Length: 140
Image (cartoon, rainbow, N blue to C red; front, side, top):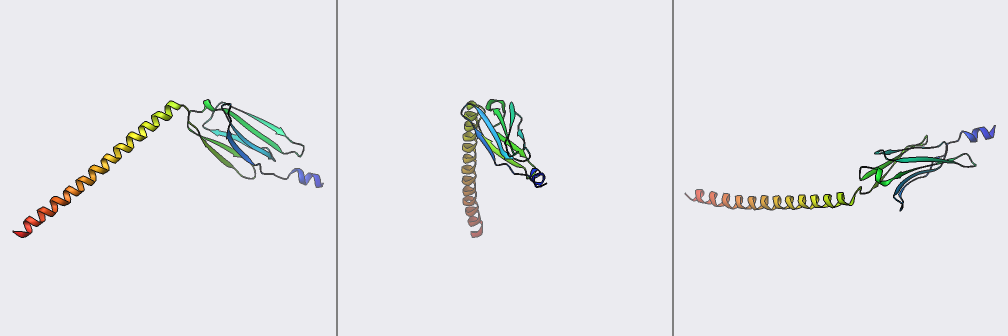
């Protein structure tokens, strides 16, 4: 009977998300009881495998090809009876996309800087003319 109680015990899995050198992204929930469920946002070209250990815990590993994601932010969602976890990783889909984003960001920053400069210049000029206008009419 003591074994039956132990069989129903839940064990939270330690979780990990990593980028491998071979061009894959790996989400792993190690030694959980019962087995965790892994899903990805956005969905990619992934395969999931389970390894059952002698103590009846289960390691679930989901591996995806990096190029199958059409986004720079990838989320791995681990669902387990002891609680859910979401892990994030940021990776660039294409280096060209990264260069274009940088150029667009730089152009936007330069444009904002010019707008701020001209706004300040306009504010200073309007204060100058307002002060001179006020002086001229207060003397008369």
